[in-house]
Length: 86
Image (cartoon, rainbow, N blue to C red; front, side, top):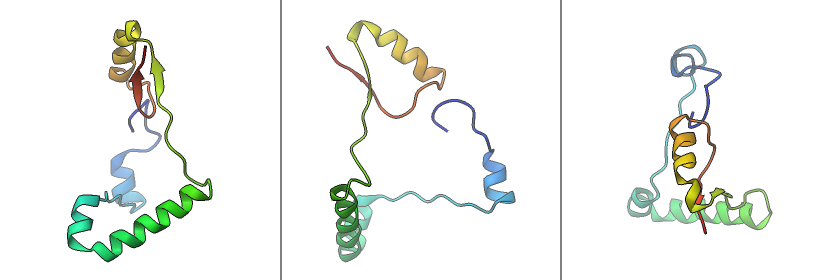
């Protein structure tokens, strides 16, 4: 878990609940199976158009708050992306 304490351990996910998470490398998918990549992207764009998915909104910090942002990141107290914007 990127921020905070996880409610369940990796051991529990793998051995107790038999849950497996598999990442998707789109670059590899494009090369290995371009037709499947096209189908996946079509589904993704449909979800975006329907408003089911949307762009992520980063937590914004002023440049002077950079040390605070880094401290929160190190403490695993953040969720999503962080941005330093003037």
